[in-house]
Image (cartoon, rainbow over all chains, first blue to last red; front, top):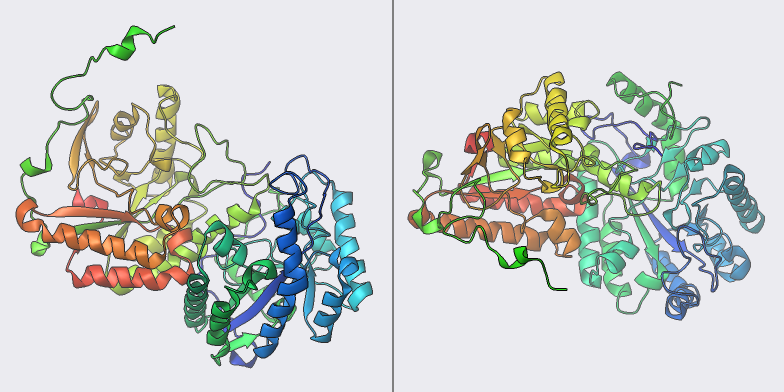
Length: 314
Length: 298
């Protein structure tokens, strides 16, 4: 076990080289609807049960099903109204269970990235071949169903191994949503490839704000607006990224969807924002700023040897 | 089987404290303090710089902010690390804009890794304090004295190697053993931020001479209020301002007092909390508080 993951170098937020998003925009904004499938009776991972309560957890299960059969559609229509495309954090198994959702998202040119096969299958204890199989299954299955080659990853239920990031890079993934150390992208230190950490967010993620922090709908909308205002102001110095990770089973609840719309309206009402998808942010960053960041870290004397979970000199 | 006799004997049952670090003194009996320029209140802003490794031993307990989920808990590792690379710079900017000085305790094992941050803190005229060796070196009553002394010496050596001579000490998790005050004073630390028995600086006795305790409020801790207790950043900021207004208002009767409070980078440095921080600092500035570092207060 390592104390430090060594997945990225320390890089102070002050005086970084400037990022400008397409069209001269200051903040790249993306929305990540998590479209998840939680199994009714998942196998038990030795390190964590599939559900916090004994299976079947009918309240937890049915609320998530409500998210797919009711909440998703409500959220999708709301995003349509503001001209926003989702970047879907997808439980890949859902391709088989609910193709209607997939078709509706494809019709809107939404992006898909992998969030594992099911959100009740954790990475803990997987060997390299097993984790590779999940990643390859994700690429193959999404491509077969949608024609899209996925470029992003968010580990199922945020469960990782020491190999996760090298496996992503090896499979030509462009970005990972698993790291929360910054409000700008940063190259991830992998053995091969060109992987970046994409600012996702736990701070403004509805699972955290509604679940862990018990916020009211109005409080959540206020947090989103404040978060946006600050990152937009800072984006004048160097472009920032803001993501709102969502779960329809939470945000689409009838008591929450209209306060949430207030926040979307606030964000959409600003010109300096690039409303886009994670894939487009990753592509623009890789093409224009990846090397600049690596060079800046090196120039500051902050580049350290080795790659993720491997501190040996490269 | 009843309890042993010691449960019904009271060896320290007499006037004053049951320990000999400092004497009992009610707030009504202290000599009033006059702060520079007639300020009614001094503030001590403390910005803890702490690193939370992926593999904490969790002994004798987990440091607040330590990992939660099975290894590798990248989720909590990176959300904490965010504070030291992004959030703290928002706090530095807000302090500079408000013209306020703060004290930055830093884990000794982070001095090398966070060198650019140390330089930025010093460039803005703030004070660096020691924050133990690391978040996995928690001082506590079950620690043998030799081990604890070695940790303190190692911390001091790391600061020496970085060219820093901090005068103030904050213990990881604000936890101490019965010997901590003696050991840190012997290692040259003259100020301790762990105790908060009064609202003014308070001298405490150690084997190596006096050490000054400066009050750092636990009840106004930004992480505890906004994360553990689910309060909004505006509620937190309003409570700090309420405390400041109340303490300043009593200066005529009690003299100058100290309001010490924390700004935790991974908490208050979040984008959505920064406007509340700016409001708080502007409010304190409008009150004319003396924004002092630990050494200035001691």
